Image 1 (cartoon, rainbow over the protein chains, first blue to last red):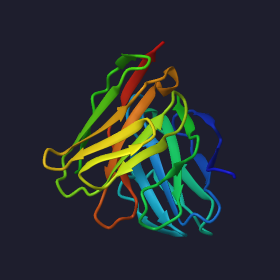
Image 2 (cartoon, each protein chain N blue to C red):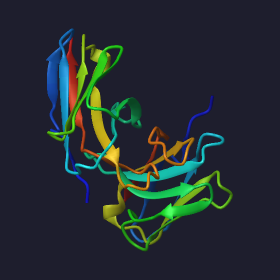
Image 3 (cartoon, rainbow over the protein chains, first blue to last red):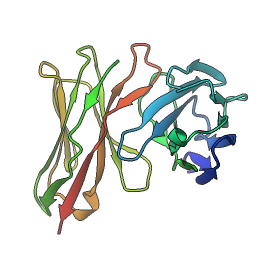
Image 4 (cartoon, one colour):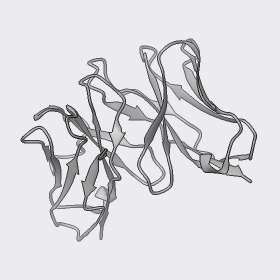
Length: 114
Length: 113
């Protein structure tokens, strides 16, 4: 069956540009997570959705980061006025339950800010 | 802030040997522990989870949990070159069970033929 998909797979942005990263979770998965992974590091939690509700956004590094999941399926992570320190791989994960830690990750979007 | 610590490695073992990967965590209240495997350029993939003290075996993989010492380890028996990857240890990030995970930085394993 289809797994988690993300687009674009690679994105190069000039400093100051806005970017939008898309995640399509596994069909029917209630929970959706965004993580940021810097080179040589483990993923760091950004935000969590249960259906369309954003229940935890404690990991978003600044108010330039915004995420939404308006219909409880596809999610978009938007970064405004990108900075070089935003360069990383952005991973989306989904899980079937509301308290399960068995998360399925998408391939990620590698963002490079020049 | 919960912390998960791993030695970044690389850990190099010959093919057929046992690879031992270790992880320590700061929060004594952590109840569950997860091991993800991440091949270079790919996304993390869940391979094992453990909730209880002791050992849990799944094929060539064994997870070991010692809550008193706050460490969890992953043993890979009969290591194969295809096991070469980064292994990430993770614990739940909060008590409300949203599923949020806190990851260590990962240990890179190299299995040499």
